Length: 331
Image 1 (cartoon, one colour):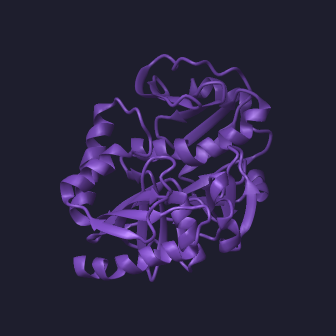
Image 2: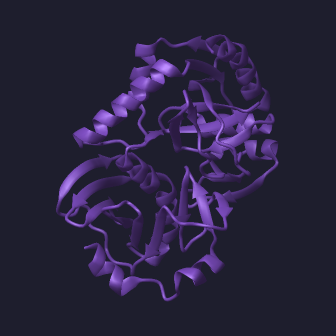
C-alpha cells in the first residue's frame, strides 16, 4: 500500500528544494521534515525522524482499512482508527484524511478527502498522528499541556475541556514558558523525566479567548475554530516535577490543592490517555507500565481552579507558587 501510493504522488520537488521552502522542525523530541509549516521550533539540520508527504485527494471511507485494528474511536464529531496492514499502519479519520505510515514509523503519507480538508489534516498530524507514532514506538505520551517555571516543568492533565490549555496560557501570562499543548512526551533519563518541547501553538476554546490579551502573543483562528495563541516554546528539556489534574470551578474563589496517593494518580493517568480506543495489548501494557512508574516517581495533585470568564493570570501564578514548596518537599 505504501509503495503503491507513494510512487505516484510524491510532491514535484526534491527534498532539498522542500527544505528551502519549509524548514525542518523539532516537535516532541522528533525532527520532522514536512511539506507544510509546523507550529514548532525550526532546525536547520537533520536527519529527519519523520518525513511527511502529500498524496492526491480521494474519498476517505468510514470503515477502517483491511488489517488488524489496533484502535477505533467514535467521538461523534471526530472518528479515527489505527490499523496495522501488510506494509505498515493507517490512521484513518473518516471523510477527512488517511495517514499512511511505513513499518519503521518514519514516513507519513497524508491523503486528504478534499483540498479543503488539508488544513484539518495538518492539525491532526501535529496532534493525533504524531501522538500515535510516539505511542507505537513505545514512548510515554500524556494528554497534557505543560509549562516551565524556574527550570522545572508542570504538566496539566485531563480530558478535553478540563482547562489544560487555558491554565498553560495563564501560566505563560504570569511569566512561565510554554513546553507544549495537548501532547506531552516524557523521556525518563538519569532519575528524572525530561519534557521535550512540543507545539508552540496554544489552542484555546472561544470562551477563553480573552486570555490571548494577557499573554501578549500572536493570535489566529485555528482550523477547528479555536483561538490559537503562538508562543516561543522553552528550548530546554526541563525535568517534570509535578502532575496536576485541574478541576475548573465556577463557585471556588481560590485555588485548592490536594496531593494524590499513587493509586489515585495511576487511576487518573490511565483514565485520560492522549489517544482513546486502543485495543492492542502491547500498547495497553506499555501505557500502564509508564503510568505506574509516573505515579510512583512524580508528585501528583488535584487542583480546584476558580474558573471564568473572566480569567486572571494570577490564578496560574497562585497554583505554581503553591506547588513550589510541595515539590521541594517531595524531592
